[in-house]
Amino acid sequence: MGDQVLWRRQTGLSVLSSSAGSEPTLAASRAVRRSWQQFFLGARSRILVWYVVLMALSIVASLLLTRQMLTSRSEQQISRFLRQEVENFHRLGPAPSGRLEDRFDAFLERNTFKANESVLTLIDGKLYRSGAKPPDLSGDWLQHLTLTRASESGKRTGPDGPSLYTVEPVGERGMLVVSYAMQGKLQELDETMTAALEVSLSVLALASVAAWVAAGRVLAPLRVLTETARTIRESDLTQRIPVAGADELSELTRTFNEMLDRLQIAFSGQRDFINDAGHELRTPITIIRGHLELMSDDPLERRETLALVTDELDRMSRFVDDLLLLVRAEQPDFLLVEDVDVTSLSEELYAKARALGHRRWLLEAVGAGAVAADRQRITQAVMNLAQNATQHTLPGQTIALGSAVEGGTVRFWVRDTGEGIAGAEQKRIFERFARAANTRRRSEGAGLGLAICKAIAEAHGGAVELQSRIGHGSTFTITLPH
View: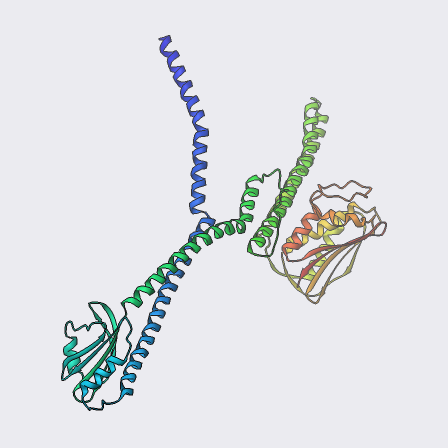
C-alpha cells in the first residue's frame, strides 16, 4: 500500500514537472507559429504579393499588347510591299509581242524576290509560272483564284502558316498573285517576346527584392509602434516613438504619441485622485476609530463620542456624494435642462446665500431674461461659491451676488472682500482636493467645491472665471451660453 502511494506521488510529480517543462516548449512553438504567420500574412508580405501580382500582370499585358502592335505593323509593311510588287509589274507594261506569257516571263526574270515571298501567274485559270518560293495550291486556293475577277488583298492560313496575299487581274485571261509567308516573321517576333519576358522576369525578381527592403523601411515605424505598445505598462507611460517625415505613418506615430500623453495625464490624475481621496478618508476614519476605542461607559462621554462620530460620518458621506457628483458630471444625463428665469433665480440664490454666515450680503445686479440650464445644478454651483466665500472672509466683510444677461452670455458671480488668492494658485484651486496655499483659515470641505462648480459650468457648455488679488478679495463668475 505504501509503495502504491509512493508510486502515485512520484508519478504526480513527474507529470507536474513535465507539464511545467512543456510550458516553455508550447510558448516557443506559439512564438514560431506566430512568426511564420506574420511572415506570410503580415503587411510587408501582403504588400510584396500585391506588388508582384500587379507587376506580373502589367508585364504580361504589356508583352501581349506589344506583340499585337508589332504583328499589326509587320502586316502593314508586308501589305505595302505586296502592293509595291504589283505596281512594279504594271510599270513593265505590255510585252512588245503583245503576248501575256512574254509579259509574265519578263516580270519573273527581272524581279528579285524575297525568301518568304511567292509569286504565281495564271493564264485562263491555269498555273503558268511561279517565282521565288514554290506555290501553295492546297485546298480550294487555286479554285478561289480562278473565280476571282477583281483586285483582292487578304490573309489566309495554309500548310506553312499564315500569309498575306494580293491578287491582281491582268487583262481578261491572266492573274498575278503575290503572297508573303508570315511564319518566319512570327517566329522572330516570338523569340523577341520570349527574350523580353525573360528580361522582365529577371527585373521583376530584382525589383521584388528591392520592394521587400523598401516595404520593410516604410513599415519600420509600425514595428517600433508595436514594440513600444508591448513595453508600455500602467506604471510607465513615458516612452515615445520618434517622429520623422510628414506621411501617413508619421501622422499615425504622432497620433499614438498624443494618445500616450493623454493616457499618462489620465493615469497620473487617477493616481493623484486615489491618493488624495485616500488621504481625505483616512483622517475621519482615524478619528472615528480612536474615539470608539477610547470610549468609556460614561453616558455623557458616550453621547459626545457618538455625536462626534456621527459628524465625521456625515462629512465622509458628503465627501463620497461630491465624488459621485464629479463622476456623474461626465455622463450625458447629468443635467435636466429647462428654461430658467434669470431674475427669479438670482433672487432665490441671494435669499439662500444669506443663511450661510454673518456677512454683509449684497445683491449687486439682477439680469433679465431666460437661460436653458439645470436650475438645481446652477444653484448648487453658486452656493458652493458662496460657501467658499464665507470660509475665506470674516464676519462683517462683504459678499456680493449678481447676475447679468449680455448678448449670448449669462453670468452669475460671487464677489467677496476676503484675503484673495495668489496668481500662481488661481488655476490650481479648480483641481480636485486643491486649496489656496496663502489662506489663513482651514477650509471645512475636502477641496472639491470649486471642482464641482467647474464641472457644472462645463456641463452647460460654459466656464468658471476667477479674478483675485491678495488683500482685495476674489470674484468667481459662472458664464453660460444664452
